[in-house]
Length: 396
Image 1 (spheres, rainbow, N blue to C red):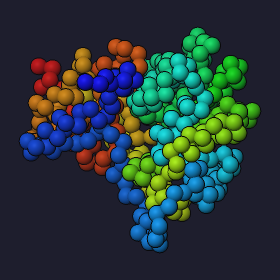
Image 2 (image 1 turned 60 degrees about the horizontal axis):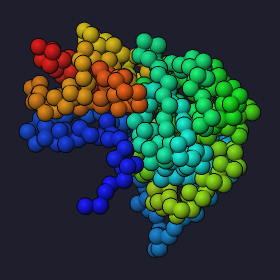
Image 3 (image 1 turned 90 degrees about the vertical axis):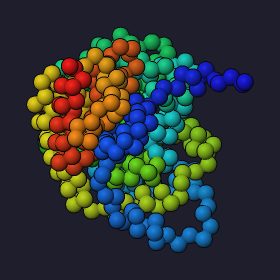
């Protein structure tokens, strides 16, 4: 039979979704599964976005501009400026999710065999996007003992080669929830300027910041205009994961002109999803205030409950809605599968994401899981109770 491509064979499985078949089996057995494995918020999508789609008066579903609706980009620019980011309409290209924005960023700045440095653990799909782009990930490890803080700049410096084209961060981080400080961003800014690299910042969780901390964007660094590329999305901000609308943002005109060629090649982002996303910009601040309060309460509940389990170590996240937990097991992959395939506590079990898939260094994170606190507090408490009992049974 015809042969599958090498690139296709090298594409990694999603650690978030690869256990879905086992979850389906558990549900067919009649077990309730608490999904701690995926960042799908249960927060209601703003009515203003849903109503805009319901009330859209469209007789011909046309292509949009390849860069997205101009009206949407204008309003998005105003939104950013209101939040202190000096972003103009010309700095924005609307994409099919933050995922496509990352693919555009890599395609516009890197060639086959080039290298991108990423602090790990990192969003698992960065591995997939890099493979699809023919780019090699060079990891620099952050640790749970340091709360997943930015590794020393000297560690980055040692990894830079003539093939290095960019550093990629997620701020605040998926899967760690770590929030990079202004000082850390400025350190990264200095190293990319020194070595003439791009700094790509995935900032899709920008609004989810806790404990009075503030988000500092790469777009706020003076003198970084030619180096900074920001990735954004409506998925988490408005609980609109299914809309698949994001954007790539940069002041670098050559980067944006190149990204536009990729945008033209895929024709245009989806029309109805842009209608919803543009309308979502009218969401009142009270919506975000309530959401942040809810997620902080969930975070506090989850961390407090996890810390009660003997042998579990967890770093307290300052943003997003994820944490990494180190478990008293040798293989989190095996444990996560066992939870679904062979275990239940009073007819219930939990689904977690093994964290090894969020690293590209072999053998790292084998005893860690990512937990998304996107469930109500009562369900989080129940989930951790199940996790506690499961660890006792698993380790007998």
